[in-house]
Length: 89
Ligand SMILES: [Zn+2]
Image (tube, protein in one colour):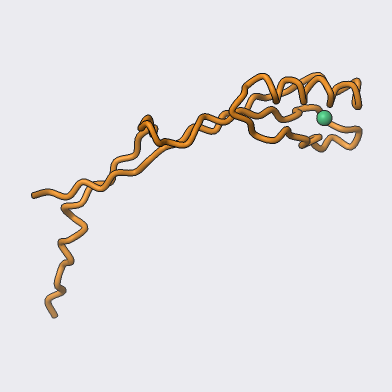
């Protein structure tokens, strides 16, 4: 009738924070096209991610050359985060 509480997890706290360690993965930059096509769906074209923020901008210029009406873009930034487990002692 008495349920045993698994206390283990009660004292363990996970913390999530941006990973700024020396060996953290790099920030990665990309662009995606926000233009709507004729049937009102999104273009959804996107550049590959790059450590160099100017590379996806180059992609955007190339994409607009192929699709002259596609002039709205969003920058996508991938920032590494890391979780820490802190147990109470
Ligand atoms: Zn597009």
